[in-house]
Image (cartoon, rainbow, N blue to C red; front, side, top):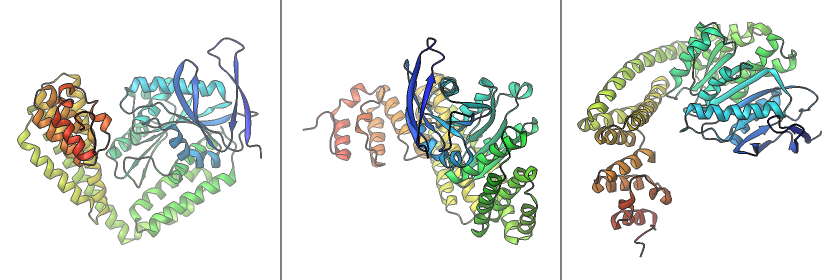
Length: 468
């Protein structure tokens, strides 16, 4: 087997005739390939062991919200090898960057890969997680050649584009505990109503990438669709392999007494494999599961949890908006109680209720961040800002962002007592990044004070100033 391949990569954007020769190893993820010499952006690439420049290849562009292209490519490696895809993952997408800037980064990556590698334009796909999923969802509007989007944990929809030109397929995925679960599911349903090929694949987990095995099953949708459209030669061996592996996933859920989830997966499989003549056994399994009392009980539990969740979401949206506008500090105790109740519910033996509680906790965390960002952009008064920052520390105790926001705002307002109080609360969570504590905006005088440095030294054993 040839493990290395020599590629002559033509930089079409540079002067005619200029080329660069590089050596890439097949079957491993290659990290930090440069987009071009003038931009400090890089990407990770995976070429299957069967890769050759003598044919054109399907490609999946992958966008991780923290620029972890290598890690993301590793997750897709199993599917890429088994199903024959090139994986190109950006190292520069950032969660806190604007969608527009992230799309520009993604555009440069895609243009580079199109120029360097033999890509089959009938099988171009995008995928991403969280903010990366929003980027992946945008790319069909930038590159109409994109045939499919695999959006995990979030999505973006341009209604005008969908109504006029869209031809891509959409596969939305979200963990059962992810706050964006319903967002992605509703996106998939909307796109299906707009006559696009669209499905929603839930998986066990929270706000995270799914496992390589789950991704392999999901990417199987892209592969089977390409075969059905005649873009890819029908491969009976691969179809059987995908079918068998996914059927085993459903069976594993059944053996784990997760009958409702097994039924959901089998229902998706029935649609997925129908055109390939694989639906008869799936229908039998669905019929058998539907007769089980445990399945009926779990279906009822999920239905009840959905109704309760909708009610709580409505209450949270309303009360949070009212409290932020009025900076209702007296109601902070009520919000603390809500988090306590959600935490208790997360330990419930009722899986549907427990997953709902994780989603609602994530929703409150997202809302607090969103409100704070909007208040900052609107240059709001300090009280609503501090109130919202305190909510961040209530909703997500281990996240340093809220504490740092309070320290910054209080310091700028001259309230060093509050700033020091939340500095100590942050240090009590086990926070260890001393350098960042001296980079909090608006704390020039505070960070030079003996009190500030004394607290840092007490918890971290050292400080930048007054260290003797």
